[in-house]
Image (cartoon, rainbow, N blue to C red; front, side, top):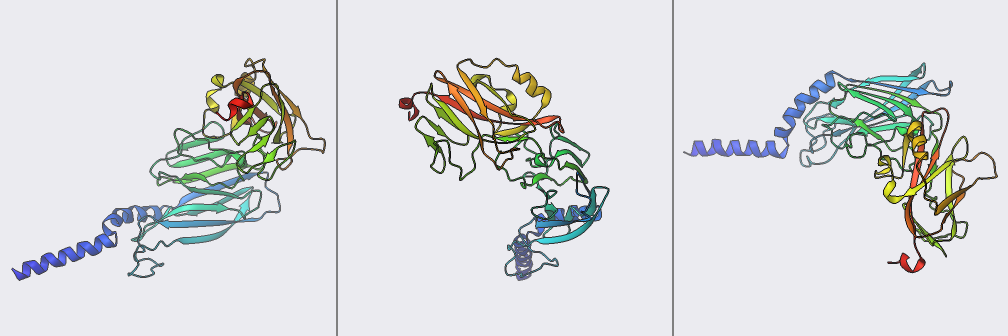
Length: 365
């Protein structure tokens, strides 16, 4: 009887230790990790327009544990603290050949912790060709294919073709595959790594993508606007990142930043007539040129008008704030669109902001 009790106790101790070390969860991941380590992923980044003087590019790979233990790995720390999060990083210098940066690396590193590739960085911070990629929020789901930018996902292979500014996107969000922001600094990593990744090919065009912004820089003041942190105010208007509230009859100047070959194009429509492609959680996205041209033919409400005030100090850039004036002659709810174009691309950057025209007495309601 005592022998049976001792055996049962020993079994319970082994099970408890196994559960504490996450061995039962780690074992199937270990098998998966062995396969991922023995069949590395092929990475190929082609940079269109890369300066000829760039002969090698640094590549950084960060692996995170898929189970919350150290396990028995080269990064073993202490059996007393198995829930400590450890990481493995690898640095490469990859030669540039015909504009391509090619290398191979495992998607997973086998062990009780079962490290998986979490992020990769190509290029040094601040370099015009620097891009990042990270694992998808749901690693079991492959990113979706897109038309703009051109993204094809098939059989574990991910292919991207587009501007560097379009590389940043959430990748696997079925409801909102575009998460662009006019204030983005351009280094937000694309979520293009998932458990099924076998090859990643990206052609990244370094030509400046046409981009407009109706969101003023954080420290901007001018044209009678006061900066109140989360909003800007004038005697006849209030401006946030998503909404302009104005008094009917007031011609209000607004800040505007752009990167366009020519003057930007504006379209304003009633709020109930906004196109489906702008019904996303964001204030900016690329739009095919043909789609924008059809949208420009939309009948615009006669009670509201927009006038662009271009800069007189040379070619504009995103760092220079220009302005445009909007006039609403009566109460109403609208959405204002601004588009930038560049003949190098078949799509253009479109941004927007909602406009509410109502008397000052009703603006606080």
